[in-house]
Image (cartoon, rainbow, N blue to C red; front, side, top):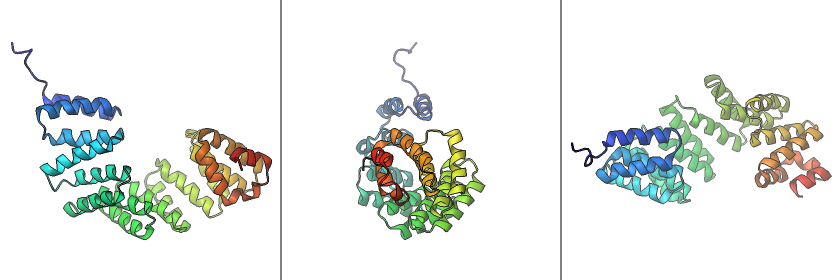
Length: 273
């Protein structure tokens, strides 16, 4: 009785699609969002989540199209502007990305994500002071999420304000003891301040859980070299290079701590000096 002509309910399709998104299966979710949009081209939930899914699979142009449709429907949709900005930034269109974040802030001055993304963008443009101000705004609006706090600490580190950066990461670690990014960055800042023994304690703790994390292995190698423990430093550097040869070789060649090893045959062979 009417079974063969019936359509699936949009809410049922949406439930299935969001389940796939939760399982990190954006491609499958996109096909389901398309089903909903075929029935209703202005379904804002389907458009928004399709845009997010397209960003995940790096189809940024298509993602922008989704968010533009949302903005047509609601010109005050801060989330649409923000996520359009993310897609634009990924495509290298920095000016348009900045404009999107500004528009998101204009339509919703309390939307922390746009301040965060604008701060990240400013940092990439080497405008560190402005980045800090913008990240502080994100933190003041939403202090429950640590992402802006972590990025603030990273920016402080880039500005060579290592004591402030360390203090920032120590505070995050107290508030969010399971935040591994902040814990790692705490180790990095300890190393920058010459406190390599304490830095190694941090790196060793992380490597108990993530033994092959290339960034941590490299950081540990750097601290071992600073403490003149050269055989161990070289073994760790060898392991890091085996995981990511191009990036680690570049870092090692540019690292002042490794300058003392530039005449070491093993080091020269590892980094291809």
